[in-house]
Image (cartoon, rainbow, N blue to C red; front, side, top):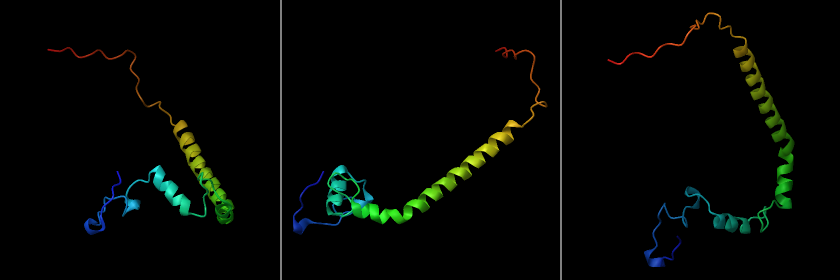
Length: 105
């Protein structure tokens, strides 16, 4: 809820969205207001040509980093599954018949 406060009664309140917008979650109106002043997005919040040009140098490095992380995590997962799959449970005693419930006194 946004309300108008006269200049004489205006105080800085950290919980007020008008003064500290980063401490509160942004609403759709805040995003549109920020995008209207930005040169990187158009009115429909799509990437503009300037943003595409700014992101182009980082595209290959980010893709290579993502691929490397994916390979590392996949390798750890594969190793873990293989290590657990080779466990021998011959030393675990399995009863022939299920246990009977204890009699209540």
